[in-house]
Image 1 (tube, rainbow, N blue to C red):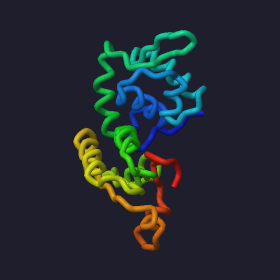
Image 2 (image 1 turned 135 degrees about the vertical axis):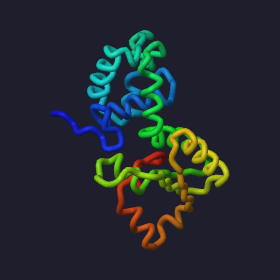
Image 3 (image 1 turned 60 degrees about the vertical axis):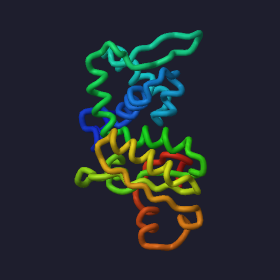
Image 4 (image 1 turned 180 degrees about the horizontal axis):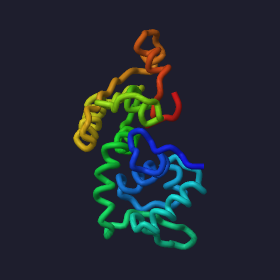
Length: 192
């Protein structure tokens, strides 16, 4: 069964392949295949197949440590840096914001909503101009704004955070109903 290429990343075979490449190329870490599958939100067999294809293409490399396969980008491949640049723009917001926001004290939940989330989840429409981020909890706002500004510089799109306490999030407004009813990409704290 062939998956449709993702709307934000039509040059990739599938959304799963784009997420897997983003996890390896954007985080710059060597990780086990199990950890990579979890970070890319892929079933282990799917991650295994994609990694095998990407190793054969010379984009990724592997090494064995005991019984563990460690996967990393192949720095000798001329494809890695251009792919990293493309992935930063199309999948970077999720990967980079997740990494930055999860270490900020007081963030109980965070997700991307709006047009970027919609396109990433396959909802047709015009390309997104910005990235809307909802942060729920009681974090230091300066740390949230700094993290969003850093990601904004990297991905080349405005990143607009909204910070609400849990009580505010559970309130009643047209805006909140729209956000709650729309597509989201979870960053911290799982499903809303």
